[in-house]
Length: 462
Image (cartoon, rainbow, N blue to C red; front, side):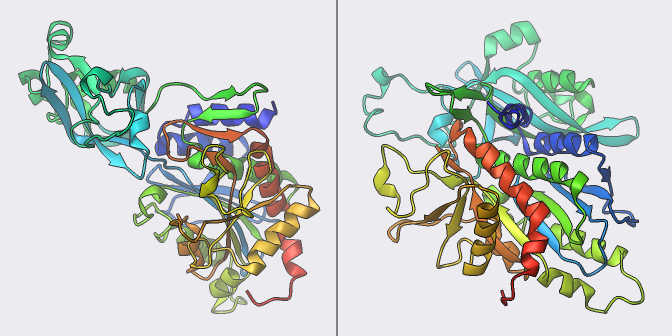
């Protein structure tokens, strides 16, 4: 097993929420000498400088200015996302019925929700804490089996193996405790008087105490929170030859990790003119229409501020527009490998396999942003570096998913869509091949280190 695979497994296990994914990304960047800049302050950037900006603690954009950079040079961007389908706690999550204390949840994204039954679930996210007359953010990670969504026994539902149906509002409520044990051991309950004195009175006081203990504060200091449930089982290698990765959130933490790893690995030897960018967005799984998503202004603002902060009186008035048309974006999001039990779901000539390299995604209706030219450029990079490449086209009788690629290409960025192949996408536990971790990182390194020179040899309007 390569060191990249080991590091990636640790990254996934330490990132049960988008906030933790960004926090771990920040650790990677700061260890590599990157400095944080704030959107609320003026930027003073230097050639050869390495920087990152964070929005909402769930979106992270890191960038490197080459030593030869001048205002108006292009941007070489890899875009991915930090979020995955999950169950999120409701603002007033306390639910008590039939002698049980439960936690109300919302379904985030298009998860395969039946896979969340009978799983040991941990809790992670962030909270707003009152500290004297100040308010601050703290991350929360209850890294133990805290709640569970139990299925109903087959004896009480004889059709469960032929007709799996459940109501997401009533049947997907996790169990936190029995009411009697909660009252005896914690002196609380969902609607007890003790809970009423907390700012978060609509939530179990037991849950607030557990969160407060993790953050090192008092329960009454918790003013609000955003919490995700996540699988407690760690990532693992599997298969007869340990060639598989079994893990949660492969979509799309693999692309996020690979982009960051490639960026920090390429930076020491980078001596070209373009700006290298890794952009990790939140809210892709729900359409990206948020202040932190790819449809927001965050990437455009970062690119514009880089251009403007390094321009001078000699720069043309439309220097930013010039830079955009010199830029290129890889939309990196996981791809569907051909399933051994559902082979008919793939189009025969476009059926990716595990271990066989990143998958270029094509769609005539622009659900993916790949064009003949943008696809060619990445294939050429791969060929020059001995990296295998696969192709994917959805069947005409199937619906096609999408990525952040099309919405970012609409800003004028040349864009292509690519991703590592996997099975069980949007399940609580997903599956991919170990070789594709290295294939992805190697391709992204080639993109960061060699694309500017390759692009200079192309005389095509695209």
